[in-house]
Image 1 (cartoon, helix red, strand yellow):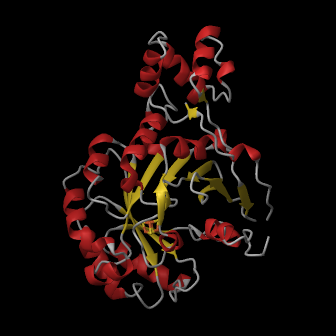
Image 2 (cartoon, helix red, strand yellow):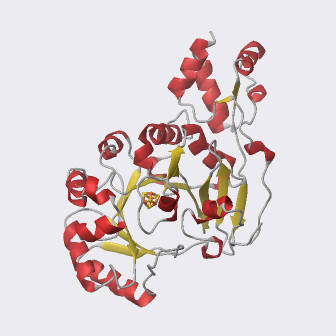
Image 3 (tube, protein in one colour):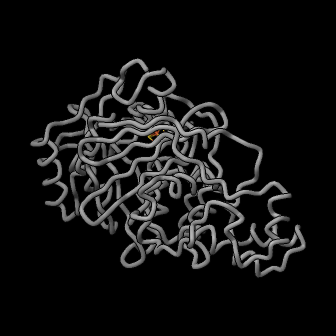
Length: 361
Ligand code: SF4
């Protein structure tokens, strides 16, 4: 495990950042500064393809236009992580400073020829899931598209990334306006030009914007379920009261999942709570006929929550019942356990003045 010191570059300024702007927004900037409209595409290419750090490097823009951008208060806006913890298994948990004095986390997960970044979408979270450290922090604000894109561009491993998952802090569909712009930048030819098949958005079933996501994005979808029974799920995830699983599944059943993209249900396994055969059969029945996968996840303990994870044999038994029903089910490998695997743990420690292994700093 190793750490590096905070970089002064995370100090917040009043500059307006170009990183995180969509093509339309860059066109609006060009128009407002009386620059030719085509300079917007040139700017996008410099920011998202060539990944420059300074406006002066946009060498096919005239000197006068570069000066206009600078005089108007624009910069690229790359902001280095404030801290990081490196796991024995190569997983790296990065912390980024935010405008409200709290930190958000991004987790880099190398795995053979894949390198995935788990991206945060909010500062804390409103959803208050019982088992979640981020939920315990409460909600402190939305991340801007710039802050979302900066997580992807500012880590040293940025160029090696093969996949992105919006499974970090926050509920992505509760910040849909900014997340939608980030997905646009990631998957558009003028942006990062990634296939949407390299990107997964995870939700707890935020129905207000799930239809928008399904209609406007081809990225994969993961839905956090954690119980097949509504009353039990409501105790773990209060969102069940506002957006019942039955409504979420009814919407998902209207989509064609056979070709376009993957649908995965995330299921954290809690010992003695949701890990028995009754739950497995009920889960299989709930998802019957839906083209999907189930991802079984070990629970990483958090303070003041008495829940424990199931042992491997119980997880395998649960998985085998699901596969016996014809479902595709896998047990997700745990990564970065020595650097607080539970989402939100590291940023909570940062707030309390401890480092990533819980020692006083
Ligand atoms: S599990 Fe996700 S939606 Fe629930 S509180 Fe944590 S971050 Fe929010």
